[in-house]
Length: 481
Ligand code: PNW
Image (spheres, rainbow, N blue to C red):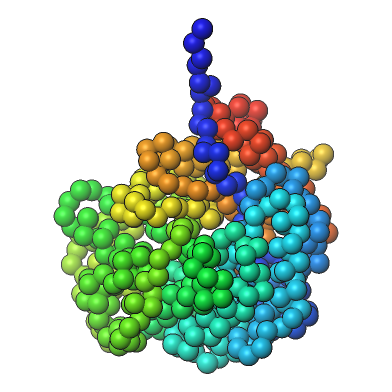
């Protein structure tokens, strides 16, 4: 008798299955127990910045619901939970002595997770900069990097070896490029010179923060950083379109990957941004500080984009006012419409892009394991009369992307885990509460949590460790009637 392996993908035994959130998006309780204001409190209270004027004042009220939320994670069978620590809970103004109530909140959360058999994955910075530090220049000011290192040491000392994996930063691209480029995120003031200074100071803060954590916990402390690497697909293989892709890769990805993983900025970026800055904020010794060995690279993946060189020559008047954009110095590049289906964010769905990205990273950094620290989708969830959310489109998105992760693993990529975005519906930044990413529905009026169909499907996947060869028809999107 021969044994036939069941079709589908079996993930490695040690593969870590989890879900992710971020402090400002779920906690609420923004003025409790000594928390100071952050740039997102300020931004969300500024008219016109967030849909419906929504704020994180209450969010999913997680601050008051830790026991039940951890129980929910246990019910879902999560093996890991990725959350962020709110800096303004630890230091209300971003410097000075630690606030014991803030530390106690996260220490209690970590203990409860461990008791439930869930590994804590801690992000030190998920965008909620103390407002006092913003008033002193924010990430455009070098001092903020030193303040971050002090804060990182405080949290490391308090949570210590109970943490499975430390992440210094979540998506510094968003802090610099959305915060000071497009202005869609806090602080929301487009200024390319400050954006590029922020890029460098975020890199510096990563290096100093990683060193601070290891200074407290020893070199054994596992450290990562999370990037939302942008996948730019060239519209053709012409030299002009490939050059356009490279130019965007440099300004979006290489300005982080280069210094952090290779110890140098890509040379091209100095020329493409010369109009905005001379990069004199890079001091002697900074690159050595930034380039610390990492244990894991965190990757957030949602979609791809399609790019080309503009056909007509572009003449830029250096005295013209800055047009808000995240692609500094890329006026000669154009974005094309991606074909295919989209999520409620308007983002295209392209799971193949994830396999390709993981394999590219594996070829380039063969010794650096990767963790998917976010992946998921917003859809227009409808609640059935029985209270259930039949979110087959979300399940299909998750299925396709996990299949893409499995394909990359089978082809040799070292992927250690998958943190689904998100555990629960939450404050989706500039979109407020109008976009839902959760596998658990949160009623934003009553705070009642309801596991969606996708959550039940994910629990079964975790239990079996195996992705079936085809998505069972009962969880496929219902055909339009
Ligand atoms: C990430 N973009 O944000 C964040 O890490 C999460 O906090 C967030 O909720 C999630 O993705 C879904 O949006 C992003 O404009 C926000 O390209 C905006 C962009 C990318 C990522």
